[in-house]
Length: 279
Ligand code: MN
Image (cartoon, rainbow, N blue to C red; front, side, top):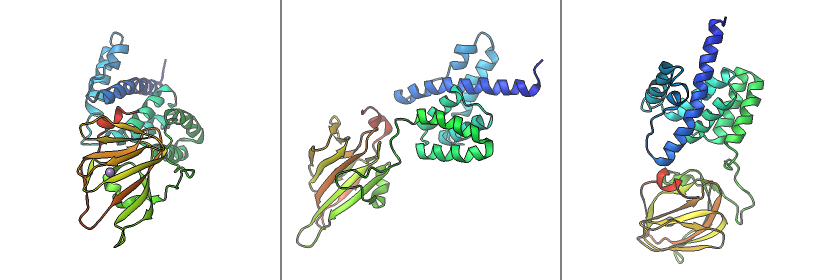
């Protein structure tokens, strides 16, 4: 005869397992850019425990997880990972929720902080167990350490233009406009996945690629991959964006002429939908 506590623990474990299975569906859904109904409960337990399957699919994932106005998907992922780690569930079901957390915007550095802090509250060995899973989930994430071996070095965080970038960028300035020479030369470094918003320069901008792999796209045209040595001349008035590949740091020199009448109009961010198809 199982105790009440054992039964509750078993129920939590089963729910966590379905969370893991569901996260795979969520990944497909994100790629397709549309909401897909979760059916894992019915697929796996529909005949054996139809009520449990219905509650899993329709209530937990259909209604609770989707209440993003009340609590974001990212926050829901954080508390779910914390609950699973606290319960000692460190198997594939946790793995599924770590993957879901990554998809919901929790960065590698943030997840490392989460697990480090939770290890104090939930038990040190759980920290080890969860790190083992998180390392696998985030193994393709090379962000967090700015590469120092780039041709010109990354310089300083690009805080002045942070509002017009998705992700972190860095800038190293080599020449600022003077009265006689209204030219700017800067090296811009993008972390993996970072790109600037769609924008228009009122004069030419020349991009000279120095490190990593990135993308350049003009409105209405296909994105163009960029590698060291590539040069792009951006014509005045052309709406465009530039940035890193999702799995690589990227640096380019930007050469532009900035007389007092020159300007850059910053527009909407490059959406995840536009960016996600690039590899
Ligand atoms: Mn530009």
